[in-house]
Amino acid sequence: MNLEAVEHCLHRAAEQSSVWAVIREATDATWMIVLADESIVDVEYDATHAEFLFRAELGLVKDAIQRSSINDLILRCNGVIPVPTITLTQDQRYELLASWPMDPDAPQPLAVYLDDVASQVTLWREVVNQPTATGTSGDAIPELGLFA
Image 1: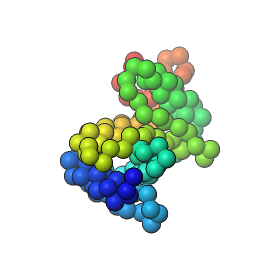
Image 2 (image 1 turned 180 degrees about the vertical axis):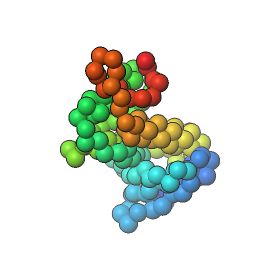
Image 3 (image 1 turned 30 degrees about the horizontal axis):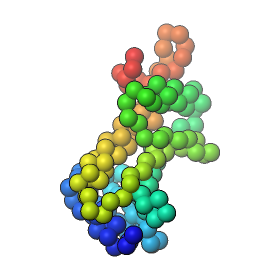
Image 4 (image 1 turned 135 degrees about the vertical axis):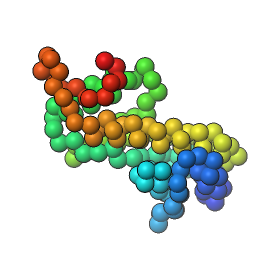
């Protein structure tokens, strides 16, 4: 697929979404999407599979108890609500990974998806950066009121 058509579609979708800016990176098929809160989502176009790949860093968590609590929440959310892939890197940073099949003639569905990615990034950043509290059983739990 023509890379200019891909970029044009991404820009049109961004204009129809809450995305603040789309910035082309030095490599041919990568962009940075700047969200309204000024956080960054990296985007790469995978020509082999004709899809966009999204990656956003959510935060660093050094505390093993807090990581366990976050991992438990991620597992409890899977299958209940649509959650993109949340991974933990070797250096203890959580990342959000998502993909979207590319259709250069359909920027509106991509715009809706960009808004969804933005809201998921915001939500999971809050979860990752939320201090844990100790529950009555001694287990660490996030202080969010989710899935009590």
